Image (cartoon, rainbow, N blue to C red; front, side, top):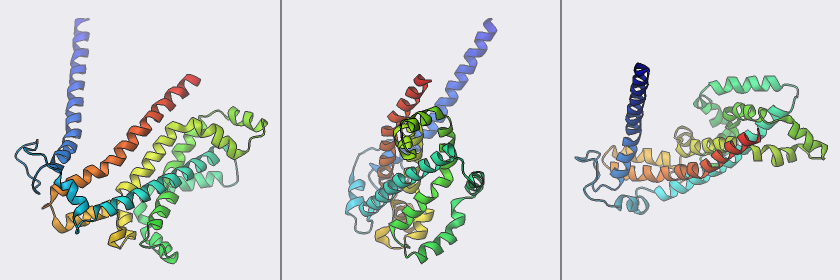
Length: 281
């Protein structure tokens, strides 16, 4: 009995030590970037972890420097990510609802095609997308990125959303149809309110993807005034290398703010959705 308790205590102690080390490894880079953004100078290297003096000149320089149009890039990215999130989330939910609730010819083939296409990385379609966007005269426009992000979303999230919709009892749909509800009304009045956890996941992924993407943004956007923050920051790093790391750190902190706020806001709906669904049985 004593040996069993001792073994349990050792396992718990080792688990806490491992979690503490993992937390330190995860938080240390983020804290270093935050402290670097308020540290004087431009160097990557610092003698101490905490800055000896705090300054916000780097944040000011982001919006006042003539060679670094960060404010304009930030606004471009926010617009693209927001519109892509709304359209992409809507398309994913509608596709998942159709595949979960309806039986039609070619349904299994469509599911197989989505599964196969989801295996391949997105950048393999870059040449085809370039030709398509060029024919549509959408190259070097934010609409091209929205087109790519939003209409490519069902390839990634449809299977997950369908699996979630399959767990919602069909008896709710049948009861609503008896009362005269259409398919769209069943989706908006019954399925959609019960899908807060899945809506949260899809919305987060559809926002974060366009917000941090560099490959498609650099491939489609050629004009400097239409760049996103990922393309703009890479141009700053590639031109200045690590000579202005503190400015880059300040930009990184500002880029992380919308993602953090969005996660904190949607997390409440995620928890409420899970607990309310569990209480209904």
